[in-house]
Every structure is written in C-alpha cells, then in structure tokens.
Image 1 (cartoon, rainbow, N blue to C red):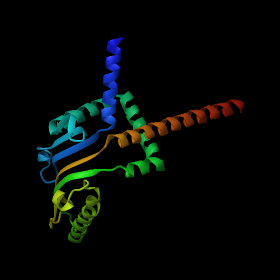
Image 2: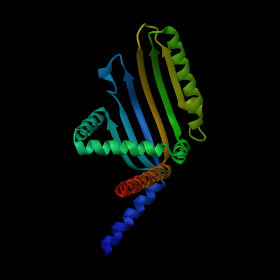
Image 3: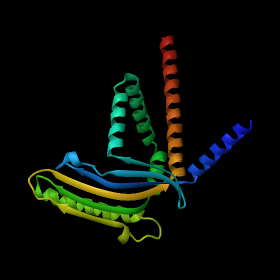
Image 4: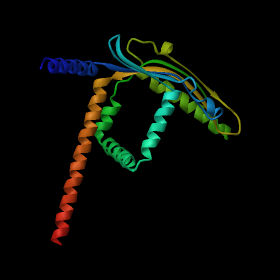
Length: 221
C-alpha cells in the first residue's frame, strides 16, 4: 500500500513538472542542399529538453544517424497493412481536427520564444528574375516574422543573424544552413492535443450514429 502511494506521488510530481515546464528545442547545423545531397545534415544535432525556469530536468539528443534509424523503423511499420490503415486514420483525424476554427486559433496563439537564429541561405533558379524575387520574398518573410517571436527582454539584433545570397546560374539550386533555439509552453501544447482528441471522438461518434441511422433506413426500405 505504501509503495502504491509512493508511486502515485512520484507520478503526480512528474505530471505537475511536465505541465509547468517549457519545451526547448535546439537545432544545430540543419543543412539542406541539392548540390551535395550526401552531405546533408552530416553535423545535424537536435536537442529537446524540458525546463522549469533554468532547471533542465529532461534532455535528449537526436543526430542524423538516429533520424535515419527512426525513418527506417517507420517505413518498416508502414509496410504492414494494419499500420498503414492506422497511419491513414491518424492523417484523416488530423485533417478533421485542423478544420476546426478553435484548433486553428489555438495553434496560431501558441507563444513561441526565439532565443537564437542563424541562417545562411543561397537560392537560384533557371530564371534570374525569379531568383531575385525569391531572395527578396525569403528576406521579407524572415524580417517580418522572426522579430515578433523573440524572447522577452531580448534584443532581436543580437539574436537574429541571417544572410541570403542569390545564385545566378541557369539551374534550380538551393543551399540552406540553419541553427536556432526556441521554446514554448508544454501546457498549451497539451491543451491543443486534448482538443484534437476531443474533436476526433466527436467526429467518430457522429459517423457511427450516421451509419446506424443509414442501416435503420435501409432495413425499413
């Protein structure tokens, strides 16, 4: 009985810590290029941690090798018929949830705090005029969005550093290097997940009731 009480107490503490935590994501050396594809993300390191204030109580790291292994496992599971059905079901449920205005509003209201952003981007297309437009569009997008999600009391000029270079060659080329740190509240993400689950259950119940009603109508005919 005492062991059960201690176990419940520990679980309760962990749940409370998760609720009041912030999830911090650090992405180091995200490299995407169609010039040297084999070298893409060779030095990639993604660190995900849960923090309460400055206390980091959970942390794990993912590199290119771990991502590759995870991708292989997912593909192996997708090869199974049951898993494929489950995957399609999950995708349909997500699409149904995103149609909800409330879910979209919750997603858009997610407070993301940017702590660091470094990027070197090179872009080129077969059309030189299009290349100029692409570079200008990317630069405007970064300069208009990122300053609004910078951490409180932080200077955007010290946190955000980026360079966008046009490549004037008659071919479609891109080379992107990004490193960034950002965080958001776990509680808000939990609320979004709970809302999506609730909408999916309501949708499934509605579908079952409609199917039942159709069967009754068909039997009467």
